[in-house]
Image (cartoon, rainbow, N blue to C red; front, side, top):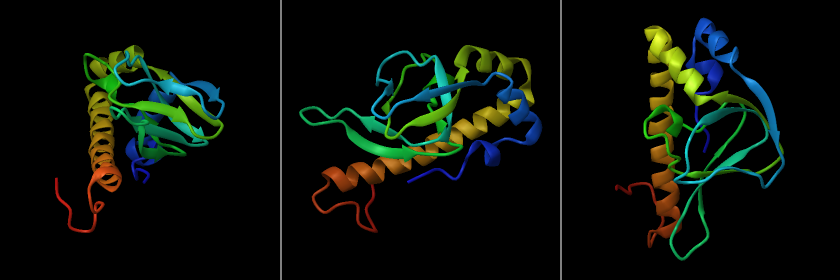
Length: 154
């Protein structure tokens, strides 16, 4: 399940251009762990090419993949909220090219410009809402006795 809120759809041109001034191009080979649940979240990425899976540690089992992200999508939102610790893990499922952003620098821009800060907060909030729903559905599929079904509620 992918988000409908890609960078291009989430931020108006001026805000997007401002954010992209801080972008640094990076790449990851398939199987590279980008971040681990519980560790410090000091950066985030926007996928250019490839796919990143988000996973959740499950005691006594392998980590459960709860979402897959692709082109234009935000990888990581934990950087936006103190204490800035990852809530999930993330891994490059295929070779990934991405833009990487320093979280402190972006939070600084948000503090300096209320309009930019609000746009970022709305985008990140939208991503969180989508990911919580996707995670709920995926975990029900994995662990509920009858799967998520069409009428499941949590």
